[in-house]
Length: 386
Image 1 (tube, helix red, strand yellow):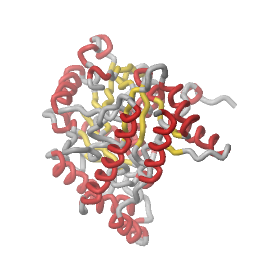
Image 2 (cartoon, rainbow, N blue to C red; image 1 turned 45 degrees about the vertical axis):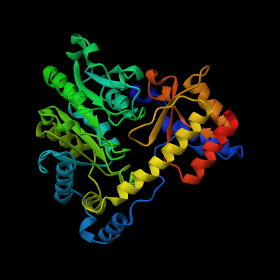
Image 3 (cartoon, rainbow, N blue to C red; image 1 turned 120 degrees about the vertical axis):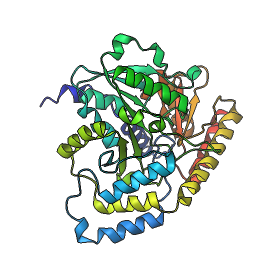
């Protein structure tokens, strides 16, 4: 049986490959500590779980949900966006519920792309931007993210002939994997180019609430005119420790949301109402749980940074995300150093090259493992490499 070209040409998904390597070592009886995957180890706050349990017993929630999402959920999203970013969004025409932001990002290109169209994709980046493009028969065009540019794409370097073929431009700040951030000025530049070339901006803002030392991440939609040319994806996964719940949302202008909603009407049947109502409790409820999460991640970040620097390794202090992005020591590339950590310390990290060719020379640590495991992990690294 022959599979489609789009499947046979896909590389192994990064996190599936990490899981495979962990299983190999565990089969050998080796205790592996996983710094590779950004899946929060902290529990979903109790008040959110309580609402889910209550609503799951209501038979009216057992039927098909709305494709667009419950109006109650969309109203909560609109209110949250206004309170957090000062953005006014119409819950009926400019907000859409998602089965997690990954699902939304993967399906969104279907609304705007035809075979042969270009998308501009950061390199390195979250792998789904590329696969979503190729599933539509599109052509991903890379925007290098270099350390000397603050891991921001240099938009002025993109040729006019390329812009002419571009339908979508993906960005993600705070950024995965580099943990870099973008300011309002960069977002203004993005909107300028998008409006000039009639390109839809796709902003993955999944880490907007995971920020440190007083930094507050902006929304692309804060820029004047952005709602006419952009869509922003948000997730409750990292903010409220709800990765397994599969709930997120998209906000954008009505002319962008409407065709996207049409795609989703034909490919899924919406989010379980009880989960949407629990998400309302998350968005409208007390936010001290988010502050508590950030305090935990910041403490872990600082422990990890101190350990890595004590060895003499070069590593910046991230202002946001769940990740530490580190340049590999001299004499290694991403793959060889990832292997060295696994063999010498039984530590798994994500190689930067797995996120794109411009990620070569870096590795990514995740902060989403229990404190005791993190402390044991940094102790192993120091003993193996000091």
